[in-house]
Amino acid sequence: MIVKFLGTHNAESKNTRLVSLLIDGVLAVDAGSLVSELTFPEQRKIKAILLSHGHYDHIRAVPAFAFNNSDRTTNVIATPRTLEILSSHLIDGVVYPEFTSQASFLGKATIKLVPLRPLKRQNIEGYQVMAVPVPHPLDGVGFEITSGDGKTLFYTGDTGPGLSSVWGSVSPQLVIAEVTWPNRLANVAREAAHLCPEMFKQELLELRRMKGSLPRITVIHLSPRHETETVREIKEVADFLGISIHIPHEGDEVVL
Image (cartoon, rainbow, N blue to C red; front, side, top):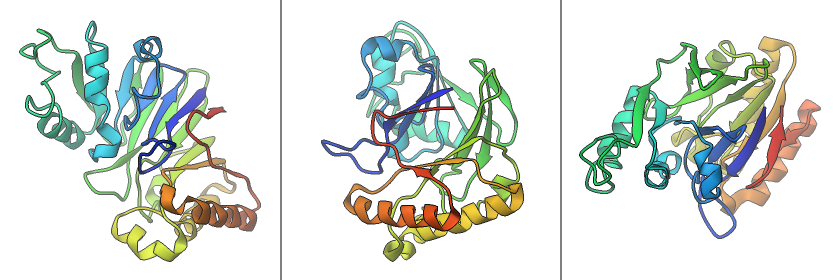
């Protein structure tokens, strides 16, 4: 399993992109920067798109993808609430065409909305996918994704503290987690249902307590304005736990 990080931040600039992952070139996970970081031929290889929740920075590129790939229909897979947000606030026939309808200017549907039931495994393009509820608004979920050869990752999506129930539901070899702000903004992180390094340390301690050891850990969704400070504190967490925590940049890949 090869995971390419198209976007690894919570804010966009010349050098930072909104969160989007691409697994083996065919399964997209969140769509903050899905099209801007891929060529047209690379976009054509994508077979399905998973969305963790309905916040703009995670669904933004769905309309652009639908327009760029209008010769086919691509499944967009998420919880019912996320799909409702996407269809009523973005591809609503006002902001963007209703790409799910044959009545769009393209004359056919280029997006099919497929609902996911949390905690139910579903075969998606050869991967076993399970959506797991996480502490974040708009019915946020993370995804446990298992490839045909048994490689398993868990992507938290956006989440706040309180992942003990999540850890009991998944058994990944790789965790891709969000850590958004530094410790001095812990109150901001908590109120927005995000993590800071100290909160993340507590979540990893609980994961280790429950599983006996820690899998590989990767951190994304950093705030660019506070990145230097947050990265330093994440490294302190890694030192405390005696592990390595990978912090990828846009375009980086992880092989599992």
